[in-house]
Amino acid sequence: MKKMINNKDEKITKVLKKMKEKFSLPDFVEEFKKNNPKDYDKLNKRFLSDEKNVRITNWKKQAMPTPEIYLLHALKDYIRANPESVEKLSENNFKKIAKKPSS
Image (cartoon, rainbow, N blue to C red; front, side, top):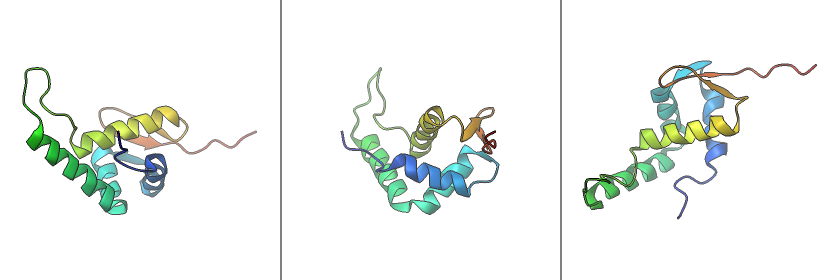
């Protein structure tokens, strides 16, 4: 399957560098939209297309999550792969971690 966002980790890193020390998922989504409008539009178009075309059944109502949920999952995957960069607080709140000086 084709990637929804090319160079996703690089783009998330750039967005995180522009974020304040503490931020929420809506802050992250807004900053991502601002810095990557074509990628966000691509996510949104895919979501709307899937919403129209997916047959509603008892077990599957939608193939593609909303762009916000997609970005939340992308951010969580990024944090899992780079635990030294961001810490998940409660709910959808995050905190950037300052790199500790090496001894």
